[in-house]
Every structure is written in C-alpha cells, then in structure tokens.
Length: 451
Image (cartoon, rainbow, N blue to C red; front, side, top):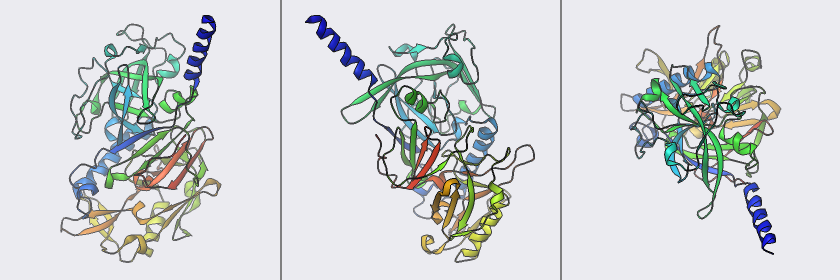
C-alpha cells in the first residue's frame, strides 16, 4: 500500500510539472512619459519642442543601432519597460521590452561598469547575482544548447566562470553586452493567490560598453520578444507551457503604460495578416494606404523585394516612417483633406515640422486613414495615429505630422516602419505558431484576455 501511495504521489508531481500555465500578463511603463513637456505632463498644451526633439533623437538612435544589424536594439532607446521575477528566492528586475530582439539579458554581478542608478523615477537598479539564487545553473560551453542560446558567440567558453557558454551582442551605435548564459527560474503570478514558474536561459551580462554604461533611462536589462529559440516566448512555448503567441496594448506617452501578454489570446474580432516569412523582425506586407477611404499611394512602393522586406511593426520606435514616394503622396492627401492649411514650423535643428494650427476636434475634421495589408486585412487609423499636439514657442499649440519620410541610401534603402504612434490604443497580436499578425482597437487600460 505504501508503494502504491508513492507511485500516486509521483504521478501527481509529474502531472503538475506538465501542466500549462496561464497566459502571462505584464504591465508596461513608458520610459519618457514622466518627463516635463510630455503629453502626460503638458496640461493639454501639447508636447514641448524639447520633448519632441528627444523622441525624434530616440528614434534616430534606435534606427541606426537596430535595423542595420538585423535584430539588436540599443537598451537605452526602447520605449517601454516591465518588471520580471527571477531566481530563488525571487527577485524583481526592470527590463526593456523589445519586439525587435531576442535575448533576455540582465546586468549581472560582478559588473563593475554597469549603471547603479537611473533617471527613471521610482526604480532602484538591481544586478542579478548568481550567488544569491539557489536555482541558477551556468550553461556549459560544450552543452548542445550553447549553440542556440549563446546568440552570436556559439561554442565560446568563458574564463570566469570557467567553461560557461559565452554570449556577445553588438549594437549599431558601438555599444556591446557580453557575459555568459545562465538558467534560472522565472516566476509568474497567475492570480492574487497562485504562482507558476518555469526554467529559462538568459544572458548574465558582466561587461557592458557604450551607451549601456549610462544612467540616463537605465533599467536592469532587456527582454526580447523575437522569434529566435532563445527568446522567452519561444522558450516557454517550446516547453509546452504557453502558446507561441504574445500581444501588447500600448497607451503611448499620454498615459504612459499598457500591457503585454505571453500566451494565447481569447479576444474575438481580431483582424489578421500573414507575416513576411524569413524575417528577423515582425514584418507584414502593406499594399496601399487610403485617406478617407481613397487609395493615395503607389502600391509598387510596398512590393516585397530583396531590399524591401515589408513593413516593420516596432513598439520600440515613437513615430512612423514611410518610404518614398509613398510619404509625399500620403502627406499631400492629408493636406488636401485637412480643415486648415498646413504650416512648416522650425524644429530648432535646421529642419521643419509640418503642422496645422487648429483648435477644433481633429477626430471629426481631419481625414481618417486606412492601411491595406495582404489577405484583405485593413487597419483603420484615427487622426491621433498620425498627428501629435505640439506646444509652440509662441505659447500656442499645433497638430504636427507624426509620420516621417524614410529616404535611405543605395547601400541602406529606405523602409516603412510603424511605431508607437500607429500601434497605440490597439491590441496587437503576434501569432508565431501560425505566422500571422493581428490587431483590434482596444482599451489598453484593461487587461488583455488570454488563456
């Protein structure tokens, strides 16, 4: 009888270990929403010229560092961060959220050059310390998983700790992160009273360079939501714990938050389009752009070619970037449908911003926009998805164009990218199992329904 009880107990344990976990929801925080001059702190007057310049500089650094390297974003130039729990006993860490990269990595003790303070209010930086977790294990460099997990440094061994699987990631701005791959427990809170956990591989970063040394908007690390085997969503899906799906709902910098969920989504009425296959980023095929229901761009601008691999959906960029000549055609249609003439206002850096001095309700007077994607999918956009309210030095305000021209060069052709201004106020679903990307207008202050 005692033997039977032991067998039953063992079966219960095995069944518990093979159960799936609920879709995991994390709160997002916009890194710049707290700053003076942001929409959240402008008293309805619009963003300050300084805040506008900061966001555009953010995008320039991100695009320079990110896309030429095919999937490595600069930690300092993402928009949203969240909190994750790792180790035993559990410790909380603030990490940059990036749909354009793959690896989860943390500043890891000992790291004498990692930042110890940050300009983000309410955050205390913490280095992951393997000696303080009873469940951590360094991945050996001879382990078969090292080639998959090391991300750019397969099979290389570290000196300290000896024989560990090394990783190295370089960014376009010259910043680097390196260290070794470790395995530890990530803990999820399924409800107020229930927790679940899983083992994951991540980077223990012991040497950072460049912008990763700065305290400005610093966090503890980065969590990538890309499609590679090392990404947290892929690891959890490969263990059979959740579906290979994640979704986010961004509130932009007006409120400064949102949610991201790992796992299957149950919300009905989502519109889907196929992902462009074989891409590092989440690319989809845009076919045309409509203004007030009329197609206004040359569809050949968006044809999938060796140099044009579709539209990049990037939650880490602020604005939208449209390839030529589609940009000029789009802007001309908006100008034609606007209730007042446009003005070219100096941006203070030798350029100008296209704006409209208007005090009415833009939702009912400026044109609506339609994005037509492969498979008949349509994304409907309001004026707030292409305009932002700008405070002028005169004390007045104007609505300015939040889409920019992406001209490119012969060696680096232009591309179309939709950032936070387009993706905000929508539930955006990345279904890696079926290789489709979907969206639906959604109240991003509400939880995302998942299973």
